Amino acid sequence: MRSSNRQYLVSVDHLRAYAAVLVLLCHGTQMISPFLRETTNSDPRGWLYTENPLGTLVLEGHTGVALFMVLSGFIFTIGTLGKDVHYGRFLGNRVLRIFPLYIALIILGVGAHKQGADLLAVVQSLAGLGNLPGSLDLGAVSKMWWAIAVELQFYLLFPLFSRMLTKHGPTALFKLLAAIAVIRTLVWASATGSINVNSMLYYSLAGRIDQFLMGMVAAWFFVHHRARFRGLLKVALATTLVTGAVWAFNQTHSFQEGHATRLLWVDVEGALWSLVVLTYVATVTSTGVVSRGIAKVGEMSFSVYLLHYMIVTALISRRWWIELTGRPVVDACITAAAAVLPLTLAAAVVTYNGIERPFLRWRRAYLIPDPQPTTPAEPPAPKPALVSPR
Image 1 (tube, rainbow, N blue to C red):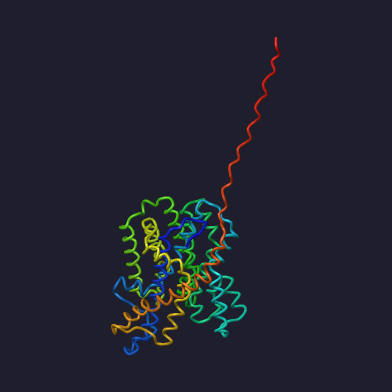
Image 2: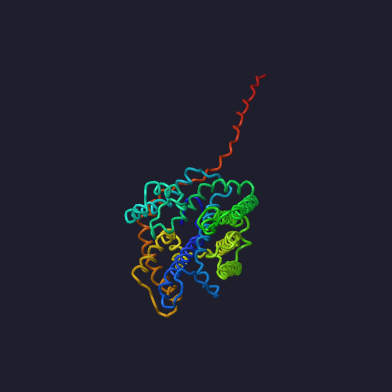
């Protein structure tokens, strides 16, 4: 995604593509597999678990959302570190990036699901509070909108965080992270009734802000110490660490059962994805055909993210899936990869070029240029003294 406010990094679009595909495969597999295993008397509402570490990246592919959040903090900081931001223009660019497709979905979704919409719900969703009770509930159409709300809430705070990082370095953000973690833990511990850990940590800025801030810290290290994180071995190590952590998360049933360890997981997940982003962006600079193809998917990742859930739901409602192996989870994953992904990419090409891209061209520079140093005017040269002839 190119912008006049920062250098283009093809590797960032690679990671956007990876995050979008992870989320798509997760939803496709988790949502389709219950219908394929109906004859096994399995609970169709049950979460899927596997001892295969690579398989957990699919089953827990919601971790791609954390990668998106880290990338947001990272890429904005790359462009603004050490510079002042024009707040109005920054927010205006974010509106041009998010709202054209978002508003199109709201208009069409309300038309089809009028029972889940009223004026206050529409206003609340447009105001960046779509992850709170009372916002629009339009079934599969609005299922992914909570992440838009979290992103918009972060955008309001980013210029402040950027100035903190510029003035005081990453130490200031680490102190902020520690304070947030302490307050969040106290809120959780002091709850007298049952508290929905997913609502607190997964669907709100209260849990996601750590991942944005860690992405910003990763950008600081990228700018100042890029060479130290360069190397395919370092990329492999970071990827192995995040895979192992996601596997452990799956094995402890943490997503569904809401353990207290979730309070720590938001930071572990954010830190490991930040390391992946830092090493990958520092290492990968290829612009070949394959690289450009993956980057194109990353460029359309917003459309992919918002549209894929509707496509999964449409396939399920028509009982269209692929049964090749007789193994419900494997066949569900195959359906997600061979049917949901290409259909979503085809739809994303249309929505990106027809709705998103025209408005992206209207974005403006939001970095405030450094003031030009003023040099004092040189004093006029003294007039030559008149010498009277003898």
